[in-house]
Amino acid sequence: MAEDPTRKSGADTAFSRAVGLQEARKLKVQRKPGRSVWFGLGLFGLIGWSVVIPTLVGTALGVWMDKHHSGKHSWTLMLLIIGLSLGCLNAWHWVAKENKEIHGEEDEHDE
Image (cartoon, rainbow, N blue to C red; front, side, top):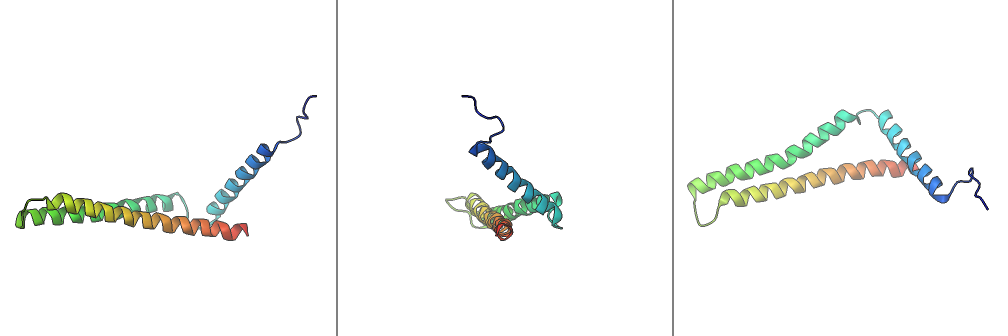
């Protein structure tokens, strides 16, 4: 017995719902002022600088420490790794905050 081509399977309806939700999110973001491509690029730059600044500060401090207080271990390498770690934690904080804000708005919209 042949299946009815007009009958939709559960996967088709789930796919349709997923596409509909993505489209609704996209339209919501387009209507919201301040959340544009430029906002995304600005946030991307902010996250990049939040990693770069602590890394450079740690490296500069490490070079200064190696010149004035040289020892068995490299201060430059140690402080570079510490600065990079702090910068990554800082970036993770920013991304988590933005993700929570975006998903919080979606949850309010869905209810």
